[in-house]
Length: 156
Image 1 (cartoon, rainbow, N blue to C red):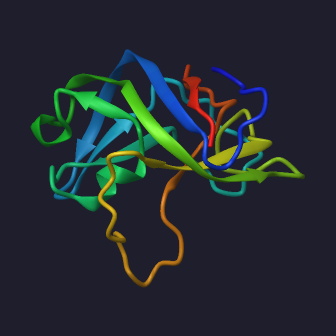
Image 2 (image 1 turned 180 degrees about the vertical axis):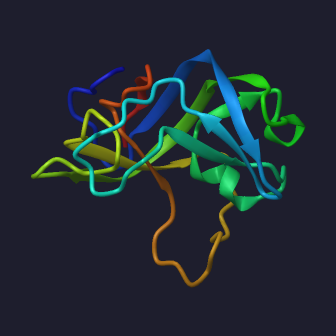
């Protein structure tokens, strides 16, 4: 896990995370449900997260732009009981906003983030995913339990 010294809106970051084995807990019509390999459930959370993450199985889903994590094999090839790899291949994102949390943000897992970055993929389509939604992008927790590496590529 990497905590950046000071990120700024407009920064371009290179994000990576080593490929790690994960169990496929189940597959629904739209999602493969993975037992998150870096999960540490927050027993005091009001959310009751169960340590699982759903990834879209539709290769054309706009939801694929809402995260940097990927699986091998691809999610649409997974079945319940499979083991896959989950990680972040080298991905470039732009920082859209920075949120500071005081008190720490309750997300259901530990450690609770004190800072989250709202980012968008550089190669993300420009049209809004859901036109009725105000914001675009998704969050990355620089202090995540996943071993993310965030490298500053350029500063606006």
